[in-house]
Length: 113
Image (cartoon, rainbow, N blue to C red):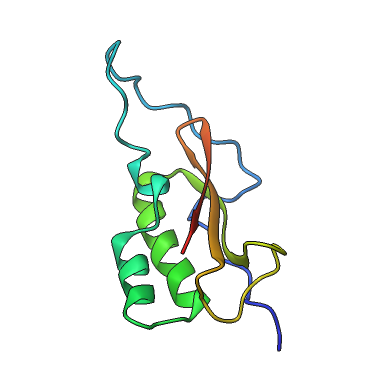
């Protein structure tokens, strides 16, 4: 079977420079704007636990959540954790991986289902 289709991107083109960073949080306080990238959105994880195994659906849910917090999404993929090949079906060895910009900071994250 064919690999999963490439993920769509946020409204900002990946070839464009990221916009200037947002105002930094006060000293000693962490910014919370990157929180959506620290784990898959609850809806994507809940879908998997409910038996929904379409990787395109999971990727779309993650992209939707990131679009609210990011300037640009470089990628969101569902791959086999061992081979890094795209998966046709989500499973316990599926790695959800992403790279996105929040301000000028590039976040790279992954989550093993």
